[in-house]
Image (cartoon, rainbow, N blue to C red; front, side, top):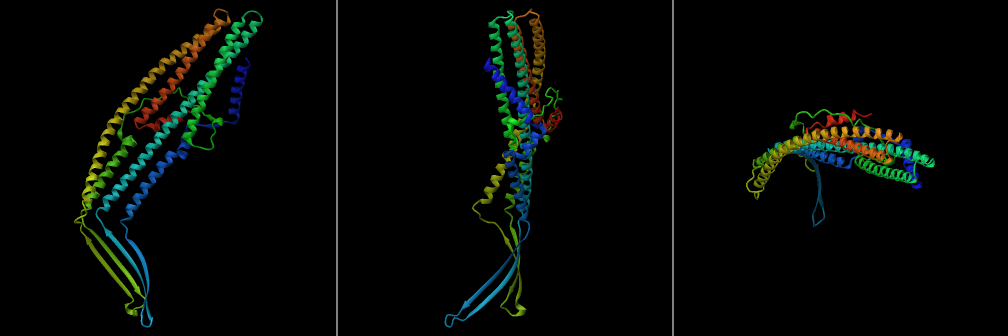
Length: 424
């Protein structure tokens, strides 16, 4: 008895502390915090910045280069150590005309667009993971509430049996049996609370926010009993992953073109303005310009290998795109089918839970009237609790399957808006 009430007191005290010091967190806030603080997403963002910088660097090769120089020299005569000084300054401008720069810039632009789409896809995946973890936490919280309701009911039954035992209506063995039932309910509540704590830790790790503490975190509930609309038609153009692969092909095509254009000659233009401080006044300033043409002849097959490698990269990207089309189509059909199966299972378990709840209520009334035994009432309550837990799990599975289906359809944002709009 003492251990039972000690555990119950700890559970009640923990719930009171959470209620007083809890920080509310909605699904929308959880996703926003993850977007701000998740380390993996930050790395993806830095990778995207590298592609943007590479594009800017590629564009900079079209611009002329300018350099300034100065020289100071002194010449000594060995026989008398007399010397002459020469001072000069120059400003040079150079421009290189290379046909391969144009497709190279186009390839860099395509790579940047691909990186942005990959980053978008990573954001979608992170949002999906946060949403599913958030739903698991809500499901565990609902199970904990159910376990606490059962525990309170079991305590009330125990108090009633103890009172009846004192008057001789119940035996001491029945009191011990009910104490064992209460102890099991306490243990179940503790286990569910531990599972909830683990899930909250997973959520906090995803969010990666120092301001959130598991012990003071209260998730704002969502109407997880909502019945979402079926996913719409599948469109590959809504898939960021598919669009990114298309941009990869564009980049490979431009890289191949740049490799081929390396066979063309390059033209270099230059102009230099110089000032010689030692010349007479009329010859101090000079302007010189140059034009050069470079025609590749032998380069150790470097250009040939570059073209061959670019062809292989393009072929690989095209094969990946074809495979991706098949995979996305298969994933879409499979995800929708799993969602439909989860919906059917949820409907069946919801009916079973409703029947078990009515049966438990009826047996409790019969027990109060003396028409049913304590064991029959406890068995009915256990059946109802198990059926309700199965319904909660099926409901969460259906919502997770719906999110996966909408993600496969390229409509995850719509599904998340529906969930965040269902906050209570």
